[in-house]
Amino acid sequence: MAHKTTSSLAAEARARLDALAGRTHLSTAQRREIPVQEMPHQPPCERVRNMSEVALGYTPEQARLEALRCLECKNAPCIAGCPVGVNIPGFIGAIAHGDLQRALEVVKESNLLPAICGRVCPQETQCQARCVVGKMHKNPNRAVSIGRLERFVADFGRQQHWAAAPEIKPATGKKVGIVGSGPASLTAAADLRRAGHAVTIFEAFHKPGGVMIYGIPEFRLPKRIVDAEVEALIRIGVEIRTNFVVGRTRTMAQLLDEDGYDAIFIGTGAGLPKFMHVEGESLVGVYSANEYLTRVNLMRAYDAQHAGTPILRPRRVAVFGGGNVAMDSARSALRLGAEQVHLIYRRTEVEMPARLEEIQHAKEEGVQFHFLENAKRILGDEADRVIGVELLRYRLGEPDSSGRASPVAIDGSEFTLDVDGVIVAIGNDSNPLLVQATPGLKADKYGRIQVDQDLRTSLDRVYAGGDIVQGAATVIIAMGQGRRAARSINALLAG
Image 1 (cartoon, rainbow, N blue to C red):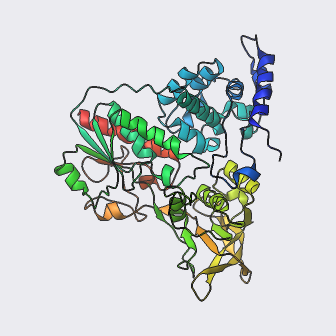
Image 2: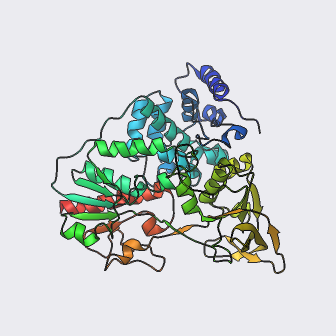
Image 3: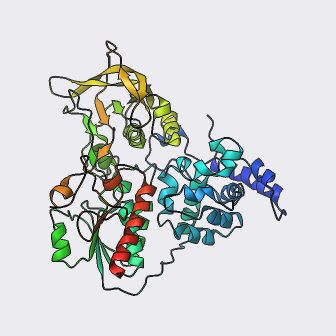
């Protein structure tokens, strides 16, 4: 597939805009005739050996033309598909009329992390899935590119230094502690600070940002974007204390009873990796995706000249899993010098939970996909180093609890694939540390903290949200829970 350059895509958009110039109102038919604007990308042959961002973002011409595709529906079904309720027709209409500063203001009324959400949220299954334009074309791929427009206006605003601080209400004298610094926590912190409370974030790592820093690669989400959002919180008075492990550095009880916090929000995410429980998982050369991506992203193992982070650089890598984390791991391995990367998934491509865009990018970059296969065991040599994986072929059976067809092993179908590195990317559970260190904090059998409809935990004045409550999900869903928890805490403190 040939990749058009940014300049050629901008020129095409400019020509179409010129053809529409002078029309004060576009009919629905005219809007339907405007093609979906293609996102400029680094060509696969270039990007596969660098960590720079793959998607380059819309040009102003493309953004305006894409915005003109929006019908600005009165009932706005797209808003119902957004976990934080962004006024989507409002901000897209502002782009169409050339008022980009107003567009950013509208987005930030509901979404404080638009540059992040525009890059990593699965808009195709949320807001864009409900887009009337896509339904009119009977093709979801023809929906208005809401996520790309959100990213554009956020990036443009940052380039223009549109960083007006939100209104902070008068100080209430109340203190709120936030455990963790991922998307749920950052959103809760912002809303609580705007209500006038003193807010402190406690982060176990040396750098704030949670999964956005340690889990999502630079080529999908540049760390400068996350850093900018964190800095914005600091500017409005949120305190961030890193290398602080709640449950070890200070207990929950100490924070509430001795340190004077009036409420606590727990947003620690789902950071305990799952394994396949097959023979050979303890061999040298086997990583959980969690550890592998943390070394690559947070600890910058890809930058060997400036970071001393130890990491194996195998030539032939097997990645097990079918979600976005598996795609991130496979594509990171290529960028760290792997000659071959085999992504192994026990269902078919139809059942893969990864975003279609991430699957397509992985294919373009040379990741080899193996469907209806899974590990039976991992093979090692006399030095306990990985030398291969023994795989088993599968067929699809009846649907399981997730609604997807369940994989059924085919007896006698074993075969061997020679690899010298393995990454297990089959999901994460909740880290049990905080629950174990906090008497009375109730969790289910999977370690997820139990909450009521207002996100209150079993402990007085303690709330929780995001992946620690619902299991591994998306950035925007975690943000939605952070916002809900902030409303509940604000009501508690006001009462």
